[in-house]
Amino acid sequence: MAKAFAEQGMNLALADIDGEKLSQVEAQLHSSGVQVKTYIVDVTNKDAVIQAVAEANEVFGNIHIVCANAGVSGKMEPLDQAAVEDWDWLIDVNLKGSAYVIQAAMPFLLNHPGDAHIVITSSISGLRVYEPSRGQGIYNTSKYGLVGMGEALKVDLAPHDIGVSILCPGVVNTELSHSGKSRPQKYGGAIETNGNHELAKAAESGTDPLQFGRWVIKAIEQNQLYVITHPEDRELVEARMTKIMEAFDISGNLTGT
Image (cartoon, rainbow, N blue to C red; front, side):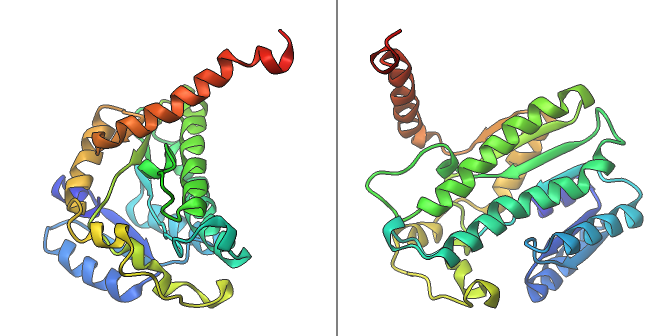
C-alpha cells in the first residue's frame, strides 16, 4: 500500500515493529520523490501509537488516509492446543492494535470531512472459517472482529463523510506465516512457525502486495466497504451466510413463534 500511495504522489508516515525493514522501505520510497517519515512502533503499545500518529500529523499538517494493517498469524494450530499467550498476541496486534491506530488518528481525520478514509486489513478469513481446519481459529477471531469494527465505523462516520474500506484478501506473497519469529517476549518470545504449512507454501506464489495496494486505491476512490480480491472463496462465504439465514428460518423451533 505504501508503494502504491507513493505512485500517487502521497506523503507517507510508516510504522512497523521492525526498524531494519522500515529503513529499507524508507530508502526505496524516497527515490520516488515523496516525503517519508518512519516510526518504530509496537502497535500493542497504545501510548507509542498515539505519539507516532500525533508526530506524523505535526510533520505533514494533515492526515487523510489511515491504514490499520499490522497483523500476525500465530502458530496455526487447532484451538484445543492454543495457549493464553497465543490469544493475547493475536488479539493485541490484529484487533486492539488496529483499534489503537484508528482511535489515535480519528481527531485528525475528523478535520477533513469528505477527504478522509480508513482502510482496515482484515482477511478472507474474517468472512469464513475454512474446512477442514487450517489452525486459524484465533486468527479468524481477530479478523472477524475487524470486519465488525469496519462495519460499525462505516455507520458511525457516515455523518462525517469519512470513508471506510475493509480489505479481505486471500493469499498474499508476504512473510505473515512466519510472523512468530518476531513475537515479543511479553507474549512468550519468538516461536518457530511451520514452513510446511499449506498457507506458508501458498504465500510464496501469492499475489504481489503492490497489486493489493493498487486495488486499495481503487476501493478508496470508489468508497467501497468490502474489498474482495480473491473471488474463488465466494462459495465458502455463501455457505456460511446460508447457514445463518437457515437459522433465522428455523428460529421458531426454539422460540415457539
